[in-house]
Image (tube, rainbow over all chains, first blue to last red; front, side, top):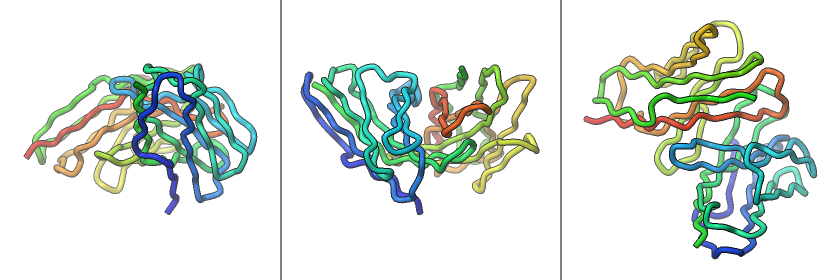
Length: 113
Length: 115
């Protein structure tokens, strides 16, 4: 089975801290994605990557950056965490090309106080 | 750009009753359509998808969805639900010309099945 692993299930940080969310997939997938999930808003795409060191902005990239130095790992970075970034963060991966299904991790619930 | 609207945020039903979760989309290009399900404390997983061909698609656990191009809808149905179907359901769209598998999701519908 494809496994997408997010390093933390719950995370509590203070306003202004730099936060790293890590995601690793074990299926050699080209594409990786970071979404945030908020009640009533569904999932919104923050950033995605289609190859090592390649990235593109999603719908809500402000306040976030990403890093993909190795194919299996995709990191989401909050440069200076703010309370409005309190959310559930979901990582996903898929094979190259369109129409392929996404495999999701279990999510990281981030609380910024 | 694409958008997805799920018309019901919560749907409560009794066990063995039929259910329909509604999904409408907008797009200026052809689309692929998906339903994902998130069981409590789990990640999202694919339930079913429409890529081309027959407009009626089915999942292995009895759900079905019908692509209606004229009404830009992709409603999810099940004739008889079980307690284990309690979950949040997300409709998603991918533009036909989009590379890299990027999906746009709806707001989600929480289905609660009562005994």
